[in-house]
Image 1 (tube, one colour):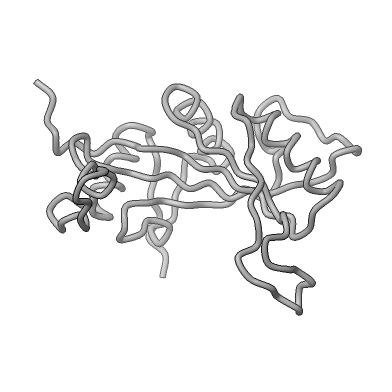
Image 2 (spheres, rainbow, N blue to C red; image 1 turned 180 degrees about the vertical axis):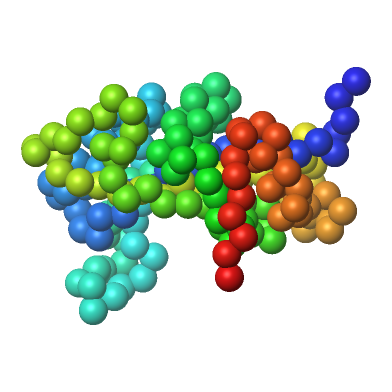
Length: 172
């Protein structure tokens, strides 16, 4: 019998922020297509920032959301890049774990392509309970997710240790 309180991974989101549109954005798109089978979405700036020369709604990055077997395959490869080690502060109180990868060529089988250059990425793993979170996403009468349904840091760490053989390092 399946326990509805089991912790599972809902999705994995990969984000590459380049800060500008144009050729760099297209190269970032091609990097995501190389690493995943997903079709990347363009992300836009939320507000104007004169220091960085960014206008509101200007395309500044790409992201892709993975689920299912593709998510599992990518997550195993990304954790391999990080030597199957996680930092304890990377786990949030809100049900997610995030880490960065400084160069896409660190993945197995990837070689440096001078036409693309070097791109790093942020990886966010979102957790949920097997039977939870519908309460927040339902169409009729959505509500805040109750405390007893939220996934705790300790539960996420335990899940990563058991299912992905990850070593968690206590820092700071």
